[in-house]
Length: 78
Image 1 (cartoon, helix red, strand yellow):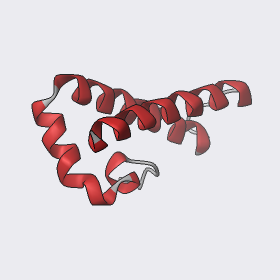
Image 2: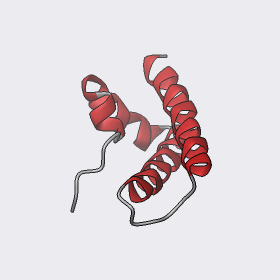
Image 3: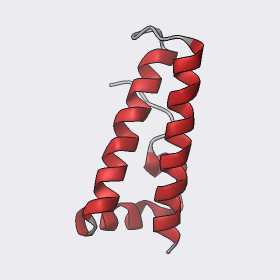
């Protein structure tokens, strides 16, 4: 399996335990983390030319990923 950049545990290595804890105890966090993971995988497939997409679409997906990451980070720091 190839390394996919921007995984939550790689983005916030110091919060890996809290990520795991919230994934198991907070349904909303788990849902957002799953959305982030799927979006991140989709972006990675586009960046590696596995799945074609326009530059505009790729930019929109990156903005969505950033917004999810910000929301997840806020929950991790709360």
